Every structure is written in C-alpha cells, then in structure tokens.
Amino acid sequence: MWITAHAGCEGTAPNSMENLLCAFSGGADVVEVDVRQSGGALVLSHNEPAGVPVPFSRALSLLAAHPDKKLNCDLKTAGLEQAVYDAAGSFGVANRLIYTGEVDRTLFSLTEEALPGVSWYANINNFVPGLEENIEALPPQEAKNALLSVLDQIGATRAAGLNWQYRHALLVWEEARERGVGISVWTVDDPEDLRRLLALHPDNLTTNRVRLALSLRNPLGSPGKSS
Image 1 (cartoon, helix red, strand yellow):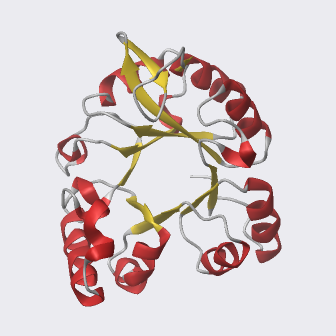
Image 2 (cartoon, helix red, strand yellow):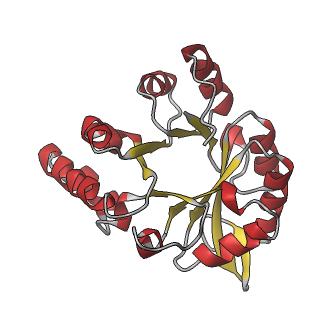
C-alpha cells in the first residue's frame, strides 16, 4: 500500500520547491505533482501559472536522487504523456512514473505498447466525461451504476486501477476488488477517514497529512508497496 504526498502536503504551497523538498524527505512512497505546459516548457502548476512556476525537471532531479520513490504526474492538460515520459527518460526515471489526470486511454489499450514502465491510474472522467464533477448530484443508485459502468470499461485497458475521490470509491469498493481493479484514493486527511481507508488496503492513498498517514499505516503491518 502506497502513501502519496499530495501536492501541497503538510501545509506547504502546492507545487513549490518547499512542497517538493517536504514530500521527498517526508517518508511518502509516492510524490504527486501537477504537470502542465507553460511557455513551451513542462512546469508544476494546477492551473495556468500566474508567476514563475517550478520546472518539472526539478521534480525529476529529486526523483533521481530518491530511488525508493515514485512520482505521480497529475497531467492537467491533454497531450503531455510523451513529453513527460521523454523528460523523465533523460533522468533515467521513466519507469518510476505514475500517470493520473488528463491521460489518453488509447495509449494504454491492451494492444498499445506506448510508454513502457509507466503505471496509469485512470480517473473516472477518462471513461465517462464529466462524471467526476456531477456524481454528487446523482441519486445513490444512479451514481453507483455510473461507477459500475466505469469498472466495466477499464478492463479493456492496461490501467493499473482507478484514482478517484475516496467517497466515490467506497460506493463500489467490493465490485472493484471482484473485477481486479486497483484502487487509488484521494485526498484523505481526516484521522478517522485515514484509519477507515487504510484498513481497507487500497493500492494507494493520497493525503496532505503524510506523517499522520504513515504513523497509522505502519502499525497495520504494511511497509509500503514496492512495485
């Protein structure tokens, strides 16, 4: 079970150098960054940057210096998959990337061999556009049916699993497990929610409270996911 340091963990500014240094030194198995292109360069920013963003290369440099960690690249705009992969390759870390966000699922079809070594945890919007934003407004059974449709579709890809808001994942947790769909949940910060989700042993749990999550996970006898 991985613990991922959310972009902005432990009260740091998201996608800042302070955030990167905190995340890489804080014991998390995976560090999340938001990646987009600005001025022709890959940078760290959730939205279009207003100031001078941290270059993506800084995250890759830190990843190279921490061979026990992975980097979750939350792609904020479409079409970045190959550029991110090539940049990571120049640091020798392409096989330690996880993709989430705006990912073209055809790159991870069962017959496609693009981006070898990259793990893809799909968002539900990759299969049902707009579902993530609208699911809270749906009646519970309708929401569950929509998520079951996603579980049906993901089997036609090489996705490692789904990366979704933990409340949504809980609606179809058993069905996902029955289908062999990996579960990555975000963003879990409340202590009781952390205990509850950790006890269910997802593939990954993303949190801002990395130190707390690690202290709760380790007594459960789960030292971290190494593959």
